[in-house]
Image 1 (cartoon, rainbow, N blue to C red):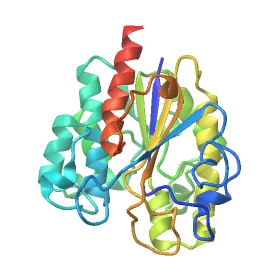
Image 2: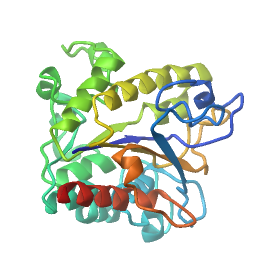
Image 3: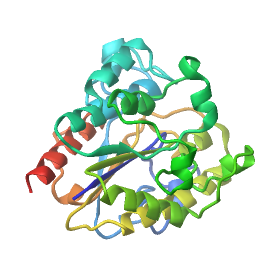
Length: 296
């Protein structure tokens, strides 16, 4: 029994329309998120609040911290903070991060993302994202290029094309090959987390066509990952920290609700949420699934 949690940065829910590239997807795991198609068979969707009662537009540092701890990070620091987590958020993530808490309960957990040699060469001066802080504080070694070459990790741009363009020697793989790898990695663990943030980059810098070039391969990648899992035994959970790519008429984040997309045991065993589901429900929900699995 295993849980795959995919964190897709900057992807909210919006009605179908000329500025919503999700509405152009007519099959695959993401096809029901654009409002113009039903969810694929076996999937369920919860629309989750990302504003958390704090005025302003949700941002990555506080949104990610909230998603991965179940704590209201914007309320803690008094605002929605963008970019990398500050000291207060790093302390929160180190104490209450999903992977650390799950590992303390005896779960075999891992973070799938590979990091470049440049990241490690920066040492203490390097910026640390929410997921990096979460992984490091849980005691999990960050994955390197050699893990990627051995098929034991997935890069944030899962085909490795960006790595090749930067001059690194690595094999390019298809979205389907990368997704299948992620699914196989999941089966060897109780909980595997993977982060994808090209969606947020496309929402900030790209055009509608750029967004489609990100979402199409992502959809294929996710489909291949889920295909490696057993719906009777395993769980797939996908969520986001804030909206962005679902509205390409603007280049900023949105206040739209975000998805909690569920499949397999993730759908059948997800705890009932209150009248106003939010991203604060994600980490507690995953902990509930883990407890259920580890009792079986």
